[in-house]
Image 1 (cartoon, rainbow, N blue to C red):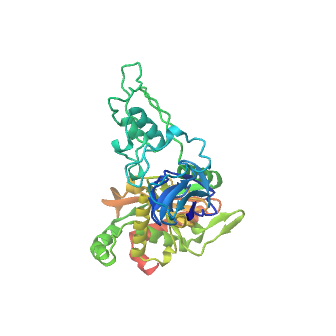
Image 2 (image 1 turned 90 degrees about the vertical axis):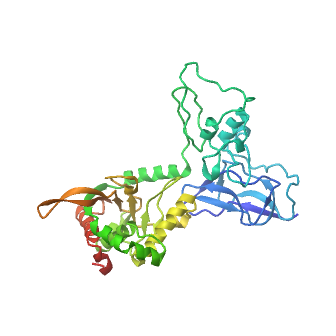
Image 3 (image 1 turned 90 degrees about the horizontal axis):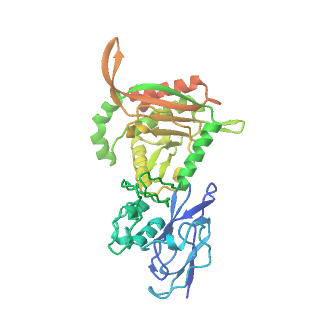
Length: 417
C-alpha cells in the first residue's frame, strides 16, 4: 500500500490559520490527481486543496469546520487502493469544538447540490428528509439552514414545535452558517462572521483609528467620456475582445493625479513617509463572501484594453471565489465604485496602509450652469478620502481636480498632460 499525504497549502506570511469547509469525498471513495478534495477559508481567500495523487481516500484526519494551519496533515490517499474498500475510521485529529456528531453533513460527495451544511443536516434529519430532497441555495448548491427550515417535512417526520400564539412566523432568510433557531413570531438569527468579514471589520476599524481621514468632493461632467466610449465601443470590443467600460477611464485619471501629486500614492510607516515609484491600484469588488480589493499592478504601463481585461478577470474570479493571495496583496491607492449599486455620494474609508482612496458614484443627468445657461449634463460626484497626517488639503483637492480635468477632456490621457 502506497500512502500519499494531503496537506494544507502553504499560507502567506499574513495568514496564520484557516477554516476547513465541507469535504467533497468520503473515506473509501476514488479520487483523481488535482481533483478538489476540500476548501479552506482564510481571512482573504478560499483555497482549494487538490488531490496530490490518484487513488482512494484512505483516511480523513480533520473534521469539517476545524481550524487548520499551514502544512497541517489533512488526509491520506492510498494510490494502490480500490474504491469501495473498507476504510479506516477518521484519524485521531480532534475536530473543532463546535463540531458535533449531530452537525455532520447529511450527504457528502463530489456532485453539486448533494451536500447539506452542518446545521441544515440536523434539521433535515428531524424532518426525515435527505439533502437530495431539498434544492440548495448555498455555494455549489449546498443546502443551507434557511433551505432546511423552509423545506416541507415528510408525513412520517416528527411535527415541529410551533408557538402558542396564532401568529405564523415568517421563514428565516437563508444563511450558510449555524444559527440559533427561533420559531416565534419575532425570529432572530445569530450568525458567526466569516473569516473574511471579520478581517474586513478589523481593517476598517484600524483605518478609522490610525488615519486622520478627511474627504474632498468634486463633480465631473461625464459627457466627453460617454461620447468617446460610444464612438469607439464597437471597434474596441472587436479588436480587444472586451468591452470598453468606464472604470479604465477612472483608473487612468487616477494615475495622472498620482503622478502629479506623489504623496497621494504614498503610505505611512511609523514616522516615515514611503513614496512609491510604481502605481498599483486596488479595485474594490463585491463578492459573495464580502468586499475584496484585487490589485492592478503597474497601471501606468497598462493600456485601456489591459485594464478592462484585468478588471473583468478579477470580477469573474471574485464571483467564483478564485482570487489568490497574490491578487489581493499590496496596492498603493484604491478605487471604490459604489455607482454600480446606485450610490449618489459616499465617504470611502482608506484601505491601510494606503493614504488615499477614490470613490466613484452613479452618473445621473443633472441641471448645471454653463456660460450662464442652465443645461442638463451627465454628472458624477467623485469623493476622495485621504490621510490628513501626510496629505494636505491642497494636494488632495488639486489631485481630485486633476482627475476631473482628465475625465472632462479624455484626450489628456492619451498625451499624458
